[in-house]
Image (cartoon, rainbow, N blue to C red; front, side, top):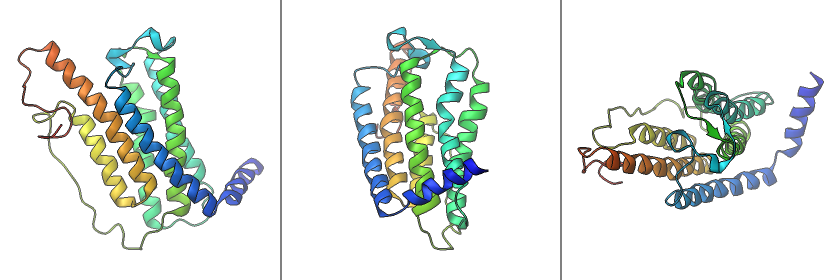
Length: 232
């Protein structure tokens, strides 16, 4: 209990305009990170999954690597949320959306991986650092700074539909939409930065998959796009 109290006291002392500015700058950094990654990934395939390679460090088993690299995006927001004395409903609901995503991504999805290829240590490390970075960004923004009117949650919009007829990376398209929807619901620079970073990185990954399908399967539809229907 003493440790928890010290943890919360630390974040209470950090709170204020200076930390808000730090969050804003980190949001810009996240966008720059995504854009830089998109540029780099035009020349170097993301080295995990089917593109796994020993050139990027020793290989780690897929399941534990995935679980450990994604776990900070779940634990960091929860640790920050534990220090909030009184939650407002919109903030609690929006942070719950983020947390539930990473409950699945960190605690469920790794156990659904079958015969997954090993993950290079460098890729694992980058993913781990990203999840710490973004876990702090989204968790701190929604737990301490974002302000919403009480009726913010009364008019949600839901997007549905099968997209694999139109794009190769419909799963990536779905996650991009998910985080842009999250950004629209939150209306914070932090959530918008995360959405843009997701677009840059997953868009590049989808393009990589799309090119692979075109090269491997002669009858693969030539008019199908990579990730955004009719556009890209």
